[in-house]
Length: 317
Image: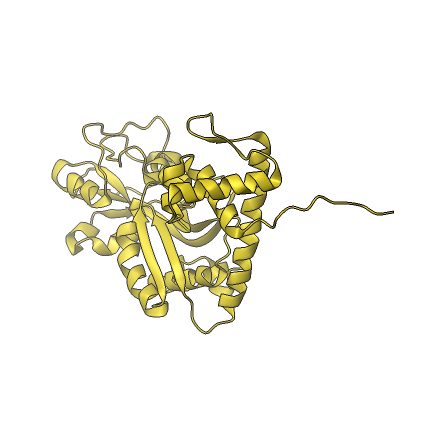
């Protein structure tokens, strides 16, 4: 018995990259710009692939262009296939003496001030052949950007409860209360349950630190709505001049003057702590670069804050 199978031409990796780009941007011109080809070239190559497969991957009558039901399945498989190809490249890179390539890291604003300058310095010394770029964004924007492959990874407070992401804890950071010098309650033992109920200055909407403040304070706690600051430094300055108090992360303490440090109080029973992690997509394949990032953070973050697992083990994908 002979079985005849219709022959189709072997699709190229380039064609797969083109359909992924078009699916991501839903616009032929934007997709072609991302792929560094002309719009007619990208369109022609996708049409050739559709002709070879004898299916429509995209519905061009929709604006913006949309994948067909079958096209969505093809795109999903294309993503998996290209990920496996990238893993082959990563295996080769892991066997070489140097780390190279590109790396785009996102970071939330309440960490960027403390982490980015030192990270750029130390990472540059360790991985001079890697083209590094870093972007400061709020958590919601970082989540959306990672889903669209706009960054390779980001640094944020976790957990995020995103099923397509992996979170690798880096360190644990305490919150401290920062009072005005003459605050009548400055010297009482502080707990989340007895935080002062007046003149709490907070960050503006969209900052994860703001959400964490209200997680460990009572949700009904009033806060000052005259001005919601965009940075910890601004909050400290507001407290100094206008009274009340705010909450600051541990990494901000070295930036305070000796006089300002007298106005800092611990929060105990339980202490207020946030987990900070590297967040990557499940299909992330740059294992060696990921470990280099971890090593840099072990260098720039105080040892007592580092996650114990990160101290002892390499990161395994």
